[in-house]
Length: 306
Image (cartoon, rainbow, N blue to C red; front, side, top):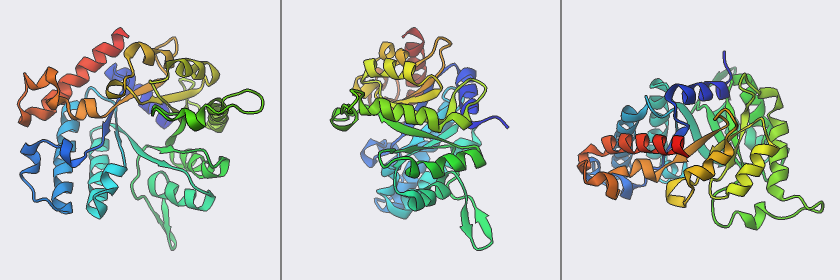
């Protein structure tokens, strides 16, 4: 079986589109044509989220290789929200999409193992083991060190999974910690990048990239280019496109000479395309999924030009 990173790259090449659709469904982002069908309870919101997510997946699975549900927007609705998360992930996988659970876990070894059991590995119950959420990738915060990452790497090796580890994030204050200079003059984020490159050595696939990958924001193009050179075997998940200000020409710095090496996240721009000035003139609210597809194709074209 191909490594999961190779499966992701294959999907990118098949679609010609290095895009991951972030599914971060705040209630106020959902179209009223969906929310009005359900009562305003946790259960009703979960049903609305499922309907919305499934429609977006149905209209994009042939042109977008992956989805990235952000866990906070499901956990905030309790058990019902987590059920919506699991239903969304399972549905996307049935459609052939790669699923990245954006949960940014990072804790001491035994706790990290529990998180890894839930998302990448299997949960032991007596003499048996069972898969729980069973996604393809998770996101991880590495700032507690190797022992908080190791269980995820071990489960990635055992179950053919992967992880995107925070290296240089797209948010404005990331430099407060990530750009701090070490005694040798090296920035902290470059040290983390070196660790990620080493952690992923055992999971490098046929394209030269590892299933142990990195999160590097498009909002810092100089750092993105620097990290591409520093970590040649590390695949990048690149947030910050669109609403956060990242441009196609900036994102191109994270790719190799073959046009591989990264996947760009777009959440609000795709989810809320039906609200944008560009598409609301063409599509009615109930055509929100058609607007998302149109925006995905526009984004694909823009990235190719960039």
